[in-house]
Image (cartoon, rainbow, N blue to C red; front, side, top):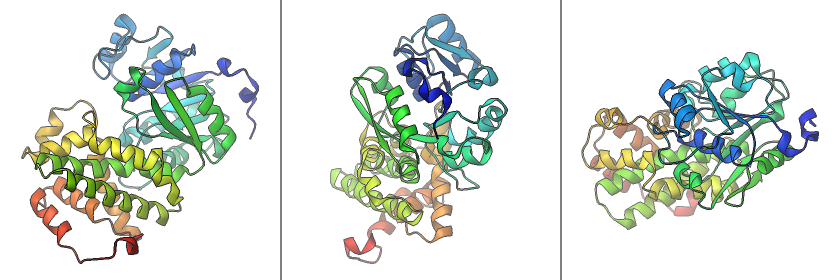
Length: 347
């Protein structure tokens, strides 16, 4: 569908970012530095005040000077009304409630970009699934997904990064691609929205497992095996749900998985590492203001995979560890002593 604003010059497009965590603030700043006037919805009053008075998000993105083109506010109606592109960057468990607040104010022609990674616990919907469920008045091809290996702090420092934006309509994906792309932020297009979303969601569960391995000091062999077999589980789930298996070899698949399982900036890996070192999950989470999506998504993946009959032993063991049903060492023993198989018979 050709939307009226798609005939504008690209620098005339009106943009909103919903969510001012580290990634939302980074994307807002990236766009603002391209001379877009960006309305940013901020949930936390202290964060809003910091951005207004100091041009810095000291809570979620400390040390990064923010563009004056960012206009922070707690008024979500003001942020999204009349916007051509709305980038949504909120924790997965908040997505439905935030979408309901946005719904009365969004134009049917708006393009909504989900930059959140997760699977809703009860419905087992991906984030675009939740958005489509709530924002049913929007055009069906207006929902897009942004994903890939992209730690916010590195993007905010202009370190070279490559991501992908997926939409069923490649014209919509291309528009978002050009809006976001910079010499340090390379954006590819894709049409496999479900594959891109599942890659970005399930990798957080695998990253917790990778962190547990590092916390237990089990070595690089173990971590490499974990990442590889975790990739098999993600692909297996994706194919069952209609994704293109090639997606999981790309940026939103293997790229994001490697980053999250090995990078020191990964919150999910950190949670796993602390569990492996013996700290209780409740204590770990109490020290965090930012969200480790894999903790909630482990339950979503566990129940979804059981419901549709997909074998995901690593994800299942992570779920049991997080629930307190299984000690990390016991989970590892169960994985290593499963029935022996041919590797390629499990595709």
